[in-house]
Image (tube, rainbow, N blue to C red):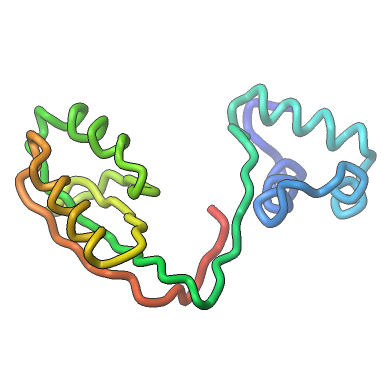
Length: 147
């Protein structure tokens, strides 16, 4: 594989984003190439660090009582590494982004209740270096594409 992925590599990655468990034979058929080509491309993408892992996606039931929220966090910039480490230890935080603007970080949080969400936000607020938070509960997913 060259230093930059070509069209075939991008197609392969797109197929894997939809279903990372597709067999080599089905990937090869969908891409119109040999199974060995798919194996070599996958190995090269992994070796280059473009594919860093494979995961499973679990469907949510309609009766799920999960509460999801976005919490924007303003921090003292000198304390960012410590704040990020402290946030990473919270199992309720599923994603953490750095953002521009008034807030520095955006945490996606998943809890079983609003009471639990409130407690997590309280724990975030007492982390040394956290200045302010702003939270909003997510109501419904209108679009969810693989990253």
